[in-house]
Image (cartoon, rainbow, N blue to C red; front, side, top):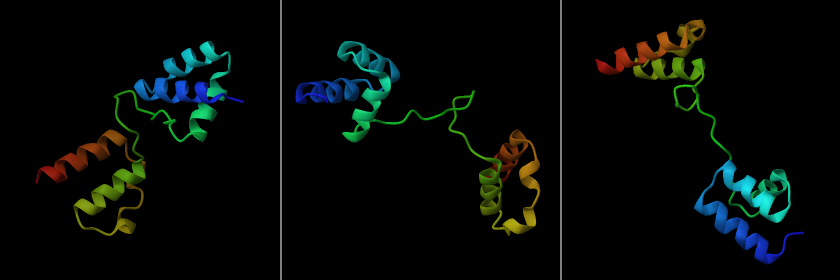
Length: 102
């Protein structure tokens, strides 16, 4: 069980710096596991799951999402673009940029 003071500390510290270092620090200070800290923060409604980013620092986008974007840009029928999701992701991104530029 967490005391009300511990809960207040968790929330205050995590809201100041919502990252894994803060969780590790709190776990050490309160002699709890990082999973316990994350669980409590989740139950309190303040924990934010870390967003995965690609190597280039962008949010991940699937090829199917890219094909849907192309379809929307050309006001086309997505069923007629079947197989386009097998193209390299960079080629799909280039196609989107080229269509958007016109």
